[in-house]
Amino acid sequence: MQTRMVLLFVLALGLLPSAASADVLIASPQTLVSGGEPLRVVLVATDAEALPDESAARLLIAARSVPVTLRADGPAQDGRRAYTAALPPELEGLGTLELTDRTSTRLLVQFRPAQRAAPQIDTLARMQGRDAEIAGVVDLSKRETALSSHEPMYFVLGSRGNTTARFQLSFKYRLFDPDGWAADFPWVGLLTGLHFGYTQNSIWDFTENSKPFRDTTYKPSFFYQWGPYRQIGSPHALSLQAGYEHQSNGKDGASSRSIDTLFVRPNWRWDVDAVTHFSTGLKLFGYIDREDNPDIADYRGHALLNLRYGNDDGWLLNADLYPRSKGSLQLDLSYRMKRVLFSDAGGFLHFQYFNGYGESLLDYNQRRRPQFRVGVSIVR
Image 1 (cartoon, rainbow, N blue to C red):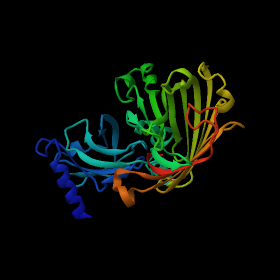
Image 2: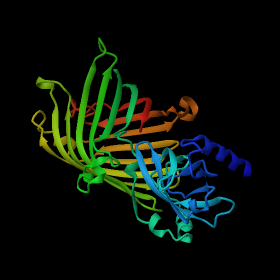
Image 3: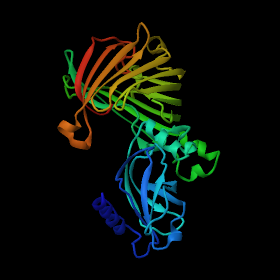
Image 4: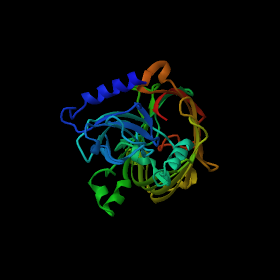
């Protein structure tokens, strides 16, 4: 333990500002911390007055600055004093800790994501009289970057006479940073839930001459997102999206397809254990323009049901269902392959099954034979 602490002191000495210009050195026996867990540090100073019962600090993670209060665990001894800090559960990534009321070295800390705070965190906090800091609801969206995943992204290949590939690209972009200037104004801070989303889904026919794209659906959207919100210590998370979505296939004449909808999508997630979860979302939508395909509601209706169950580090089953007699069902089964083939770059073995009407927007009113495809995905 002493050797480990010495190494950590050396690390602290090597970080800016240098030890020569710092009033206080910061060290810690922890190099990896789960979001929501307490962080324990040791402050070292030649001036005993620089080691008060409480000390203000901040965590810098990317462009985010998180205020932190260090509370002493006991009296100072030989110019050293141990402190504990309560941290928000949504922290993720590599960050640095530094004091804000005096110059200090900076401590590197790696935060791993925590979907929920463990029960023992509550117990520790209560023992230290810090109930207010670990109680309440956490907005897990704060851990998301401005550009993040939206819908699954995959490339799958299959045949039912003609050999076709189907692939999907998708992302969403948060228009206002919750840690930027907008967060400094109460009413402007509400804008941080605004997102732009984009999804593109294509069916590529390898059998026909020139290997054409049979159809491509372009789906931009503007929506507001609340959450996901989670009560500290709870396995359940709730979120809600509401906004406008356009879908078209970019064609003209008889092949033109286009719809505009307003939608609301509540979602519930239950973490069964540390790696297994079940979630369900119901997307309810109303048409504001369907001139190119006025009868599309007979096939898609006004609802899309999504169900997911599986292991974040293994198999995951996803189902999308338009619950109508002329609706459709799509099943996606994927398995994480990063430890086998892709190291930490990510990647999933992906199986897809589609049955019903409207595999593409062009064929919204046509039912073909069931289609099975296999391939890879990077977001599921």
